[in-house]
Structure formats: C-alpha cells, structure tokens
Amino acid sequence: MSQTERANFGTKLGIILATAGSAVGLGNVWRFPYMTGQNGGAAFIIIYVVCVLMLGIPCMLNEFIIGRRAQANTARAYSKLANGTPWRLIGIFGVFTGFLITGYYVVVSGWCLQYIYASVAGHLNGDASYVKTYFETFSSHPWKPVVWMLVFMFLCHFIISRGVEKGIERASKLMMPLLFVLLVVIAVASCLLPGAGKGITFLFSPDFSNVDSKMLLGALGQAFYSLSLGMGCLCTYASYFKRDTHLTKSAVQIVSIDTLIAILAGLMIFPTFFASYPDAADKLADPQLASQYSGPGLVFITLPNVFQQAFSSVPLVGEIVALLFYALLSLAALTSLMSLHEVSTAFFHEELKITRAKGAVIVTLLCSVIGVFCALSYGDTRDWLVFGGESVFNWFDFLTGQIFLPTGGLLTCLFMGWYVPKHLIKDEFTNGGTLRGRFFGFYFFMVRYVCPICILLIFLHQFNVI
Picture 1: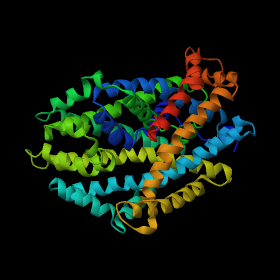
Picture 2: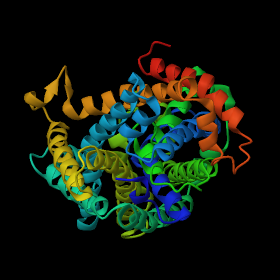
Picture 3: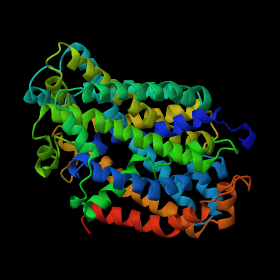
Picture 4: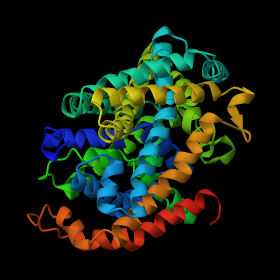
C-alpha cells in the first residue's frame, strides 16, 4: 500500500479522542486509585503528574515520531528507521506485546459486561461476603466468563473491521465523551454523600512526610503504564496522523485527558469509600488488604458493596450508580482494547498483504483462543492451566506488564536517543521545520539520558532489586 492510500484520522479531534482512548483504560480506574490510596493521596498525585510530564510525554513522543515518520504498522515502522539493523526487532516485540495483552485484557473487559447485567438483575445486593462469593463463583464458572469475553471481543472486532475513520475514530468520538459524562455524574454523586469530605481531603491535601523512594518509583511506574507506552498502540495510531499534526501539542492534550480521568476516578472512589468506612485511610494503607482494594478485588468485590452501603438511604440509587460504573468501565476497556486490536490488525494487514477485514478476523480468532485459556484459568484450580503456581491469566499479566512493557519502553528510548539520526527526529518533531520546536532540546535530553534510567529503575523496583 502506498503512503497516499494509507488510512488517516479525519479530524484533529478524532486523533485526540482515539489516542486518549487508547491510554484511558481499566488501569485509570482501578490501578491509579489504588496506588494513590497506598501512597497517601495527594502527595502521590503531585509526584505522578511530574512523572507524566518528565517521562510520559517524551516516551509518547518517541512512538508518535516513529509511527508518523514511517506511516506503517509498528513492526515495519521500526524496521524502516532501523535500516536492517537488529533495532528493527523492537517493533516486532511491540506488536507481540500488544497481541498478548489483547488476549487477557478482553477477559477482564468481559467481566464488566457481566456486572452490567448483574447490576440490572439485582444480583449484587448483599453483604461483602456475598459479593465476594459472587465474583469468585462467576470468575471460576466453566463457560460464563468465556461467553462475555467473546461478546466483548466481537464488539471490538466490529469497530476495527470498519476501518480507521469510520470505525476507530467514529467510535471514539461517541464513547470518550460518554465515558467522561458517566465519570463526572458518578463523581458528583459520590462527593455529595455524607462524610465524603474526608475522601476529598485525602485526595487533595498532600502530606509529603511519607514521600520515599518507593512512592517515587510507584508514581514513575503508574505514569508509564497509564499512557499505554511500549505496546505498539501509540505508534500504530500515530501512523494514521496527518503530516500537519502537532505531535507535542497532541501529546500534552492526551496526557492531560488521561490524568484528568484518573483524578476523576479518584473523586468517584475515595469520597464513596470514606462515606462507607470511617477507617478508610487505614484500610487503604494496609498492605495485607491490598488484594481487596486493588485490581479485580477493588472493582468487582469491594466497590459493589461500597456503592450499596453509601447509597443505602435512597432506594435503587446504589444499583443505578453500580450500573453506571460498570458501563463506564466497559467503555474504558473498549477504547483501550480497540487500540490493542489495531496494533495486530495493521500488522497482519500490511505484512501479509491481505485485506484489513481478513487481518481483523485473524486477530480476533487468535486472541479469542488466548482469552479462552485465560478466562478458564482465573479463580480456579485447573491443574492444566497452572504453571509454576500461577494461572495462565496471571502469567500473561506478569510477563506483559512487568517485563515486556518496560523492556519495550527502554529499548525505544535507546533507539531514539542513540541510533536514529538526531536531524531526522527533529525534522519530525518540528513538522519539517514549520514549527519552532522550542522543547526539542529538553525532549531529546530526556529520551537519551533520563527516561532510560527511570525505566530501568522501575524495572528493578518491580523485582525488589532496589
């Protein structure tokens, strides 16, 4: 396919909403609030914002520059700039990482659909023990998680198969504003609860006495993961950018949207949590309770009960809030899954020289197979799906999140900082010299020296080396 035939986003708004949708996902709703709670609230948020500006934007610009310069899928994009050297393998590694993430991310996305149904059917009405049992029973069921996973995957497939402008861009323009409205509605409802003020204070009153190296590295890690760096999504989307797209401005706008949504998620969760539990701060800070207040434990066990308690004085409000919350989660999951699916779809479409529709079918079928194994392995003791004491689901999560993503991000920084010619990077950064590029020197310094060190520290911290 020639460059002139390649699909593009139709509008600047479409670029921002689609790319922000890639970054905004389940991690904004369940990982950011958990990390904020574990690290004392507002002080963590401030450090996180600094890390996003110092680390997130330069790493995002790396992928934007590679993708738009090459106007190709992630694997071919790196190959074009690598000129036949082993650096081209970074692109293939990125596609592979995005492919694996798609396979298990869709499982959790399917859970969100189940909980929309459960909210409507009134299945979440009960005490904390009941809600916990409900999740454990559902997640270990022999076929229900698989069915919801397949429904979610084919919904994503439908959007991707319609193309970049008519599929991804059009869906993003609909879903991102709706996601934002739902988030604001739930956050306002939470902040109006009796006792919610303590949660708001916790979120916005910084206490820097608890700042230590662990908090700093945690904020660095969250900044990296929350922006979808290192999985090929941003590079692939950037290949659909028009030549006059202002990359730096777009990166700042996308990071701003992503951070705003993460903070709104905190406003949605913390006021409700503090309204339900007088000792909420102690619960959040207790490492022994981490499984209850992070990841699936927070979203599918703790929050349904919290919503029910917090809004118990008004009939049906708790159920309505829960329904809106899981609709919100589903939208966030879908916008991210679209970008993950597109990474592999673009790869098969261009490298195998087949139609886009056939490429999407290949990705959907292969990732559905992975999803089946991941869905069946979660929350059960099926010996054939457990390796080294961990389920297939947990292995995919561990390998991609803790090894592949930071490795891809580190290699990309080294590639851009030390191999790709500086004049080529500057040419793309300034849109062929039509922009001033006032921050190019700062960007290049960060990519060459600071970002690799920070990502390496994150990597080592995950394995308790430092």
